[in-house]
Image (cartoon, rainbow, N blue to C red; front, side, top):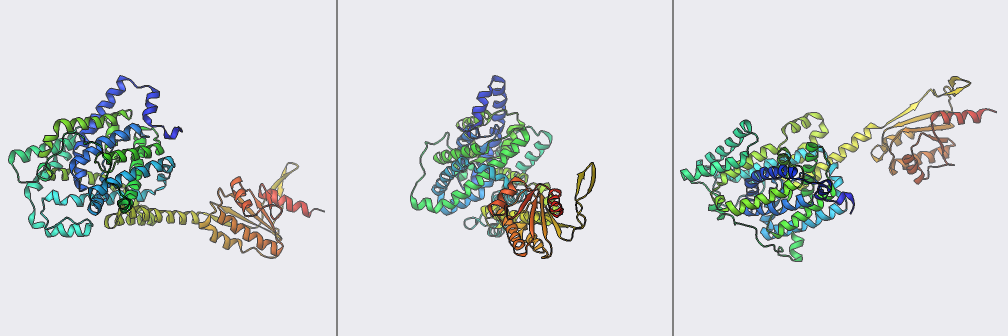
Amino acid sequence: MPDSLVPKTVSILVEGYGAARLKADALAGLTVAIVALPLSMAIAIASGVTPDRGLYTAIVGGFLVSLLGGSRVQIGGPAGAFIVLVAATVARHGVDGLLLATFMSGFMLIAAGYLRLGQYIKFIPYPVTVGFTAGIAVIIFASQLRDLFGLTLAGAEPGPIVDKVAALAQAAGTVSWAAVLTAALTVGIILALRRVRPHWPGMLIAVAAASAFVALLQLPTETIGSRFGGIPRGLPLPALPPLSLEKAAAVFPDAVSFALLGAIESLLSAVVADGMTGRRHRSSVELVAQGAANICSALFGGICVTGTIARTATNVRAGATSPVSGILHSAFLLLFMLLAAPLASYIPLASLAGVLAIVAWNMIEKAAFMALLRSSYGDAVVLLATFLIVVFRELTEGIVVGFALGAVLFIDRMARSISVQEARPLSAHRQENGDERPVIADDPDTVIYRLSGIFFFGSAATVGTVLDRIADQRRNFILDCSDVPFMDSTAANVIEGTLRKAERTGVRFIITGARSQVRRALYQHHVRPPRVMMRASVAAALDTIRTERVP
C-alpha cells in the first residue's frame, strides 16, 4: 500500500507505543468525550433527529476516523456544519433517506481518497472558508432560537432562514421565561468557567447544572425525556438503510453535498491539527477513513461524520499523542451511554440550545472576517458572496460560487502581473579582450520585447495586443522569455500567431531565455527551429545578429 494510504495508527505502532503514551492518550480521550457528550446530542437535535443518533455517530464514526484516519489527533463525530444539510434532508426524505444519503456519501469519500482528490481541497480560497463557516454559524444560531426562548409555533418550523425568523417573530408571545432562564444559566456558566477555569469541561458542567436547576425547581421547560422519551442504553444492531434505485436517485444530490462538505470540513480540521502539532496529515487516507466512518455510522443509525475542529483542538490541548486518544474517546462515550442514559432524560433542550449558541459564536472567525473585509475589494466580494449565499440559499452553492469568484479574482490578478516591455535603445554588452562593450547600440533594424510573469490564457489577449505592434520595417524581433516561469497552450498559440505575422513580413524571430517548460509549450504549437531561433540570452541573440553583419 502506498505511504499516502497507510493509516496513522500503523505508523504509531511502527514507531513504538508505550504505557506513558497510553496514559496521555487516555486522559485526552476522556477530556474530549466529556466535551462531545452534550455536543453530540445537541447537534443531533438541531439536525432534526433524536439525540441518540448523535451519540451513535460519535461512537461509531469517531472510532473509525481515529482507527483508519490520516491524522494523529483528528476527532470525528457529528459537526455543526452539517446541521442545515441534515435537517433539510430529513425534511425532504425522512430519516431513512438521511441514512441512505450518509451511506452513499461514504463510498464517494472512499473513492475521492483513492483518487487522491484530497490534495485539491487546499485550493479553496481562504475568504470562502471564512465566509462559509460564518454562514453556517448564523444558520446554527437561528435554528436554536426556538428552544432558547421556548417558543411554541403554530406549525412546523420553516427551513429557510427568512421564513424561520418570520415564524419565530409571530410566536414571540409564547416565550417561556423558564427556557430563557435555563439557557442564560447554561451560557453564563460556560463563559464564567472559560474565564476562571479554562481547562474544566465547561459545557458538561453547564448542562448538568442546568438540568439540576430545572429538576429541583420543577420548571416548565422541555427536556430530552419530554420530547424524545430519553435515549437507549447501548448501540443498536447494524442494519442496511432501506435501499431502492428510486430512493438512491432522490437522495443522490444530498449524498454529494454530504461528501463535499465532509471532505472540506475534515481536511480543514486536519490542517488546523497540523498547525497545532507540527505534524502532517495524509489527506487521501483521511478521506478513506471518513468514508468508512459514514458508511458504518449509517449502518448503526447515525448521521454524517466528519472531522471536528473544536474537539480535535481540545484533543491536542489535552495532550493527545496518537489516534488512540480518539479511539478511547469513542469508548468513553459508549461507557457514558451505558451507565448514564437515564440521566439524559433530565437535560433541558434550552440548555443544549445554549451550548450550540456558544458553538455558533465560536465558529465565526471574527478577526479574520473583518480583516478580509478591509484587505481588498476582491476578497471582500468573495467573502460576502459566500456568506450571504450560505445563509440565504444553500451551503454547497455558497462554496461553488465562492470558489468560482475566487478563481476569477486569481486569474485577474495573475493577468495583471505580467508585463511586456520594449527595450529601446538596445544596451546588451559582451566581453571581448577583457573589455565590456556594446554589441549593438540603437539598431533600427532590431527590436526586443521582454516578458515578465506567468503567461497564460488570462493574460494572452493583453500580451497578444502588444506583440501585434511589430513594425514591418524591423528585420529582427527578439522575444526575451527569461522571466517567464510558465506558459500555457493559449499563450503559446499567441506566440505562434506572432511568428506567422513575422514570417509574412520577412522579420526574423528570435526567442531567448526560454525555460524547459516554456520550450515544450512552444514546440507543441510548432514554434521551433527553423521557423524561429532559440538562444540562451539576449546577448547571445545580438551576437548572432552582429556576426551575420560582419563580412
